[in-house]
Amino acid sequence: MKLQLPAFRFERFQRVALIFVAALAAVVSADRIGEAADSWQAGVARVVITPDEPMWLSGYGGRSHASEGKVTDLFARAAAIRDAEGETAVFVSLDLIGVPIKMVREVSGIVEERLKIPRRGLMFACSHTHSGPALDHSLSYMLNMQDADWAQVKAYQKVLNAKVVSVIEAAVADLKPARLSTGSGVSRFASNRRDPKGLGPYDHQVPVLRIETPDGSQLRGVVFGYACHNTVTGDYAWSGDYAGFAQLYLEDRHPGCVAMFHTGCGADQNPLPRRKIELAMKYGRMLATSVDEVLGSEMKPVSGRLTTKFKEVDLEFATLPSKERLAEDAQSSSYFVRNRANFLTRQWDELGHLQKEYPYPVQVWKLGGGVTWVALGGEIVIDYQLRLKKELGEDSTWVTGYANDVMAYIPSERVLEEGGYEGDTSMLYYQKPSKWKTGLEEKIVQAVRELAGKPLK
Ligand SMILES: [Zn+2]
Image (cartoon, rainbow, N blue to C red; front, side, top):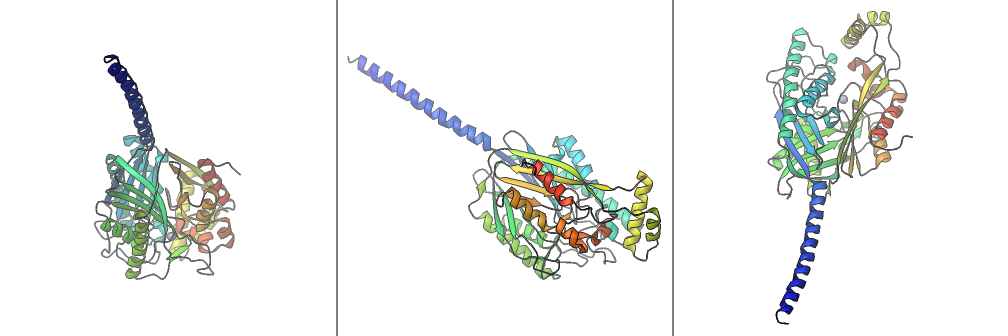
């Protein structure tokens, strides 16, 4: 008995121990599975893109000469994120007036070849600062530049494209385990600029993506958005404007962190009042404080898979000018009208016809089961942001405008019908033959619904 008892006890202990070990293993492996399913990697990087020498600034047609001095540096910043299955996306934030399609095509071609990240996995956003350099050729025909100025712009663009490639490569090289979480705050300085001023729709929400070390001890990156024109300053000094200040304040407050801004559908929103550098700093501080409040609050962990989708939809112009009309416009006393006529005449000569539609970029990323992140091209008005949030979920939808190509203003059907600058007259500065044809809002929204996996209406 004496021999049996311990044996029995040992056997029972063994069995209990085995059950315990098996249960522990099950718990550990369930944990690992959970961990693996949610294990994200992230990498961040930034590079200065301030031109080395004075050159033309973009954004205002009234400027008459090259830049003078600098208030802040301008940056290209990037955040790479990768889910447990290896799906990778890179968000790029640029302190620039726009995102020229030629740059996007060149950079994404190189990145696709070198890093095997497809076009759908790259999102190019900008702050739309009006105190950044002229680009090749987003909006630059509104500037009264001479041949030598254009040569300088093209040379800068070459350097810029290489820097954007390098910041994407650096962010991907920096990929390491990370904890991602999302949240949103509020900042109230944007105001609807269309008549009657201040009374139209707006969206003061500030979406925030937090990127930190797995234990939460170090904030590595923050991506945040706001739907408002970045047009407080308007002189001749390089400046990231309020968005530039917001990014720099956050990077200053959190050493080692890269802060990345994206503009929402703020084409009909202005920061008011404006035109003083102190106001740009003030709005930058307000925005950074709002982001900081979100960072310090309970945020929602990102878990699940990353999906990235991209497509182009053809948006039609309302009318096309005749050759006679272009010849007449080429003699106009307005250089805006002359520039557009010359641009369209060149297009006619090269293609044998005028483009009657434009390929418009629509992108949707899903960050796990939480956020649906929609990126739309052009200077797009607030109606899109409000409509998409309503249709796809107020708290789970982010909308970035000015993304992947800034080819013109993108009015909603309401704004198109009302006309004015955002609905019609701004098309001149983007060398577009006329305002958009009615029906564009539905086309864009349907494309988003399709990419977001929502049933088409
Ligand atoms: Zn604008």
